[in-house]
Length: 117
Image 1 (spheres, one colour):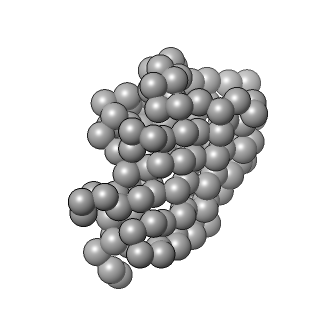
Image 2 (cartoon, helix red, strand yellow):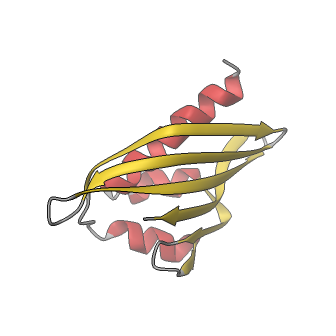
Image 3 (cartoon, rainbow, N blue to C red):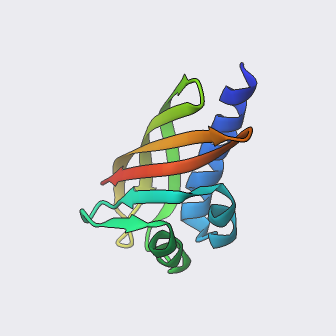
């Protein structure tokens, strides 16, 4: 496995865990200044709004990623994955996400995310 692939695999795992754990500090480390996220409710939020959104407790539990596809094109990468989780009412649910990452000065940062449920 290439070093970039190892790094992106770990960052993807961190990203999903940070959503579940409302870990604003970790997101502050891995989001690019120009980050945007397209939310399941069709809103588009910038980095600052995403960090505020992340700080609020979420109703879903047991968020897990699977069927991960990581495509690396030089200093740009796209990660596609499926998710499974438990809703607030205890029902099992699934979703998808696509995250875009850019490598700047040797560091991978998330520049875009699109989440669907």
